[in-house]
Image 1 (tube, rainbow, N blue to C red):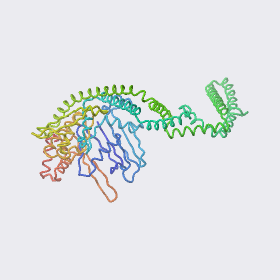
Image 2 (cartoon, one colour):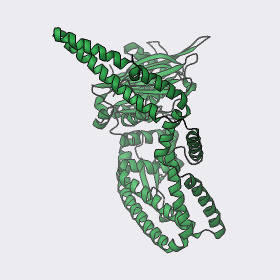
Image 3 (cartoon, rainbow, N blue to C red):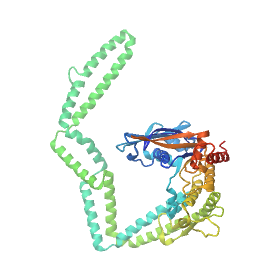
Length: 552
């Protein structure tokens, strides 16, 4: 559960702190008041893309922090991010130069770490996300998510990549002689360019370490000799003076045993000095002043640097390129000899891919029946008394892809007597919103927090009341955050927030206040088109909505 959030210098918010309640939390306010900014800030702290244009004018940095219950966090993530208490805090900052910082429990992490937690903690539904339901590719993704056969999908994707790789080898074997010679010449030239230098990962590292020492060899030798003299070689060196002091202390310790530990400390210091002097002596003896050696090393370094610029950026990339070029040259030179072998491999890969696609199809067909029933059961109470919803799965072996050979389409009939037709051809904006609410309820049962930004778009009246009840039911046992314009939805909340925008001649600020008792009734009445008059019809209607939701 999301317990608390603080937003600083985000868009038109200067400094805002919010405490959330379990269940349904609703944000309401006039159009353009900034309700969605709060949701955007929550999305930002959970790893969504940050934009410097969102930093409040006149400030250098925006920051958002959020505190969650650790009971919602899987054990493996608790261990990975050292979450030990009942709650844990996330924070993210972005400055005007585009530099982003992220923290979990005060410890620096990557933004992708916040995103990883975000996927586990919260499911977002934005204002325009329902439009994605018009695309069949999204239908396939949603069905697979419901079916939970990710491992089989991944195996199918791997089989598809394997088939494509074999096909590429076969295409290379069948290309025209002119094209083959051109590619062969270019590949051999590139490989020779790398092999002439013959770099190694170890050599590249050694050059990077050794070159600074070689470039400054004269000055380093001079300073190393001077330090060595001071530590060891000079008649009055540090080790000589420390040795004399040690002998005196040892004599004193024979007379006063309290000085024994001090004598031991000085002895340790002397050993350390002698070790340092020995290391420094070896260092200066290894310094080479030969100009030829430096010239050769610089020339070698420059050759490797050019290879990394062309085939890198790292030396490992250069070495991987060389391996790939050798394989490509072998394919080009001996492709015809291997053509029959490749054809057999391709047939085997195709058979394997078809088998996996068939398994996926069978599982999708079974899952489609379950999902159709679940969605129908979820959306029927939302003003669809005679609704029909079906997930159609059609296999086309001629169009095998990384996700198999299935085309998935959501079919929908909202009214009696209407045949099932593709959702994109029949559903209105309000109907799509309600279908999305049903999908979210079915597909995100384990996510502790669900966020809906204007899920009630295009609906009103009794349907709005039904959506409000569905949102409250969805919040049972978890938490739902919702931005709404509907009084029927706002009345069902466990906690209401009113968002307002205050503008002056120099600045614009967003304020958010928690609503209780009379202020809550007044806000519901405003959403119904009335004012603060306690004797108005809107005020009475607001009280009825709240009583119906057991808020009084």
